[in-house]
Image (tube, rainbow, N blue to C red; front, side):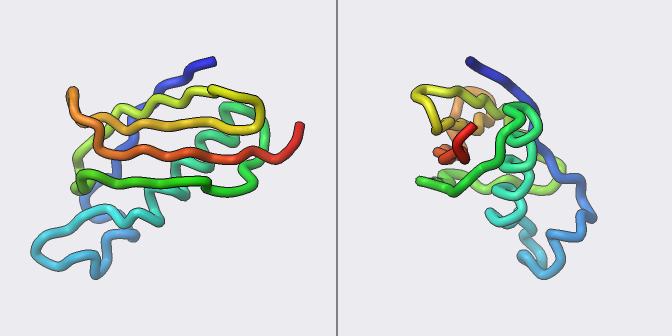
Length: 98
């Protein structure tokens, strides 16, 4: 199973306040919250936890990542955030039992 979406945060988003003046980036917590909510809607299952998260490149306000969600084994999903051909983020989530 594979799903895709585009993740972006417009300039002026509330989550950007103070993060960081003069060089704003979207906080990892905001990215995680958005992706967990999307995964729960797509899969119709709750996320039990984050097994791993790695951010290789910041997401600037107004920027966008193409995010691919794949279920590789029962109970877990992997997500990859791409900026063009470059991996910007990888994430593995553990799902609650069905």
